[in-house]
Image (tube, rainbow, N blue to C red):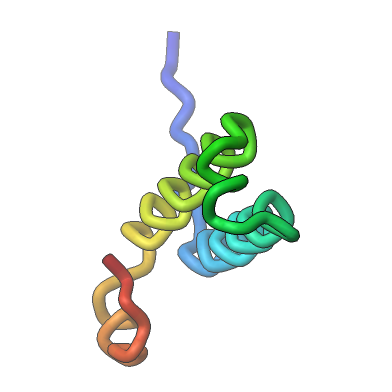
Length: 75
């Protein structure tokens, strides 16, 4: 049986993912102050997860691209 190789995903798609995750964070936190955000379990968890996904997606952006945009806190 032969193994199928999944083609490597283009790094630009990860930027699109990051923007979508950031939009999710804005949506989940809209209208919440800090106290209500922390108290809202679902919004809090969903926001943290999307921030984690932004960080994970950033690891797929090549270093040479990151260095061209050094003002972005990639980590």
